[in-house]
Length: 98
Image 1: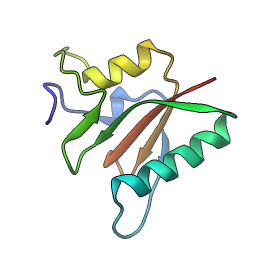
Image 2: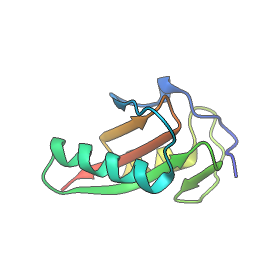
Image 3: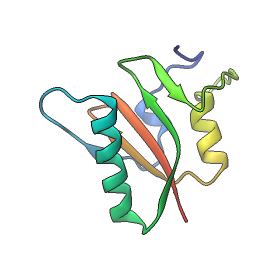
Image 4: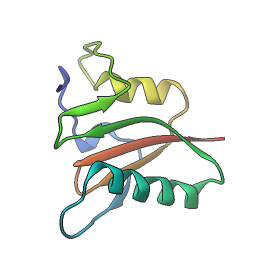
């Protein structure tokens, strides 16, 4: 399910980019994102994610805003400051540092 507001790179605050050659599924992307977030802080906690290929996101709440998707608003409002962007928005994971 896609949101009312399509995700753009400009919506992400200081994203950490990861580029991967070849096919990558959600589970592999999440493992990479967790590993990279763990380099930024000792105990990252995943708040939200976006999977462009499947058109899925979590938390799965749709609350249309004019400026960003609801899952991103949710993460930012709960301290999501570690943003991992894989393969140019194919996967985005937002973590908070504990």
